[in-house]
Length: 251
Image (cartoon, rainbow, N blue to C red):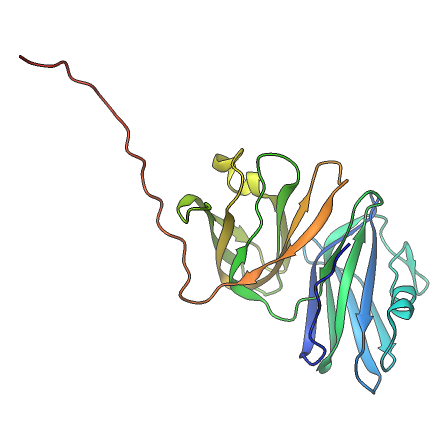
C-alpha cells in the first residue's frame, strides 16, 4: 500500500474522505496526524451514502501524535467509544476541526486488497480522473460526494489517449449524497475500451476519488482526482465518416 504525502502546513477546518466502507470484509482505519505543538479537538462524522449521519465522535489529538498511536486511537470497528456502529456502511467521512494544519488518511483493508484514501481539504467543480481501465480488471469506479444542500449537475466526458472525446453523458448527484458507480455504468457505450481519462465539470464543487480494483478486490487502489484549470475542456465529439450508400456506376 502506498499513500501520497501531504503538506504539514495546510490549514483547513473541514476534511473529507469521500469513500468509506465497513462490513462485508472491509475493516477501515482512520489515521490523523497533528504536526503542531498544541492539542487539536476534532469531530469525526460518518455519513451514509444517502447523507444521513451514522456516527459522530469528538476526540482530542495530542501534539505531534505518532503514526502508531493514531491507528490505535481511530480504529473503526463495530464498537467505538462504547457505541455500536452499523455492521455495514457505505458512505463518507468528514473531519471538523479549528482552521489548523492536520494530516490524515483512511485505510480501506479488505483482507486481499488494501489501499489508502487521503483526506481532502478542497472540493472541486472541474476535475480529471487520470487512470482508466475498462477492458479488463482492474476496473475503474467513480466516487463523488456532494456535501452541499443543492443537487449537482455533472457533464462527464471520456477522453481517449489521442485527445479525442469518445463519449459524453450528463448525470446528477443529489444534495448531501455519495455517488459510487463503475465507469461502464456511467458511460456504457465505451465498455471494452482501455486507456484515456475522465473529465468532469460540475455545477457544485464535489469531493471525489477513483477506485481501481477487480471484482474479487484482490487488487485495490485509490487514485486522487486532479484539479483541472478553467481553460481545460473536453473537445466536442467528432462524428466518424461512414459510407451510407453506393450508387451503381454510369457509362
